[in-house]
Amino acid sequence: MEIIDLRSDTVTLPTSAMREAIYHAPLGDDVFGEDPTVNRLEEMAAELTGKEAALLVPSGTMANLVCALTHCARGEEVILGKRSHMFINEAGGVSALGGIHPHLIPNQPDGTMLLQEIEDAIRGDNLHYPRTRLICLENTHNQCYGSPLTAVYTGSVVALAKHRGLSTHLDGARIFNAAVALGVDVKELTRGIDSVSFCLSKGLAAPVGSMVCGSRAFIAEARRNRKVLGGGMRQVGVIAAAGIVALEEMVDRLAEDHANARRLAEGIAQIPGLSIDLARVQTNIIYFDLESDRLAADEFLSRLDKKGIKLLRTGSSRFRMVTHHGISSAEIDTVLTVLGAVIKRVAQLQS
Ligand SMILES: *Cc1c(COP(=O)(O)O)cnc(C)c1O
Image (cartoon, rainbow, N blue to C red):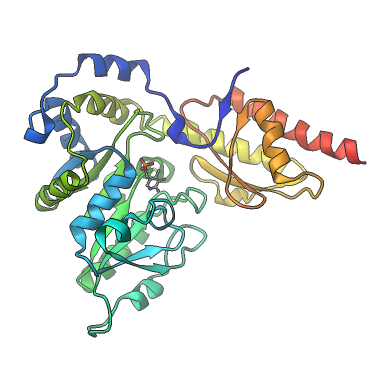
């Protein structure tokens, strides 16, 4: 049976161009700075995000952690969205390993945080308080429907941070999805931000790797922190080679994933018993709710699983689907047909 895996864009497999590039990549010891393929990828990433330098790390989680460690000393505070990946999904790394204190403020449905709430969260000079050091944004916002944050919004947070003498970090795991969805250059979404992380291993389909981008001085310090975390790797051009192909060949096609997500969402909106907020669908991540009182969420998942369709359950009756390079538009039709049939069958059995 063919499996249609919509759990995440992390399930994408490397393309044949990537496998080819991995095979032929010139290699060296990257801890000595001597892997030419890594050096080339780092230059490309810096150029694309409009920063002076970049660093290859094994994962998005390590990218965010390296940045937090580079910005903040122990006991200092980071302003984070309550629904941010850094707060929810990174095993508490900033506090566990950095002694950094998260100050949470709500994310709006579009993934932003209100400027006033950011402002209010910034600590005054008082020996009772931790010192605020860093503000983090996430673009696209994973838990907020994959919403893209605009350049205007990002710019306003950067201005606020600069005014208050704070640093900014952008968790841009899917920053290329944001740029494609908004029709802007990535540089517009990273302008003025002190550090940016992004993933090669999600929609861009590389097997491993994330990038950290920032000033030359920031990246030099981040390189030390990567070493502290055990992320200094040797002939890692084998990873970087796929990353170069990802940046060269896999960015523009993200528009296909967005179109597929849109079609999937529109189809789901037509199925009685499923509900979705269509206006929120802008990139490759959709969330929908099962509103049938006749079908339990577990049962729904297992019926889909038997038909080869995998999705992620993210709440008591809420599910996530992510479109990606491994999903064709024909497969979107299949998913919609199966979803409709599963719901209809339940209605028939019980009426
Ligand atoms: C996936 C993701 C990460 C972490 O990436 P990993 O490579 O899985 O560690 C960080 N931030 C966001 C928003 C993500 O979606």
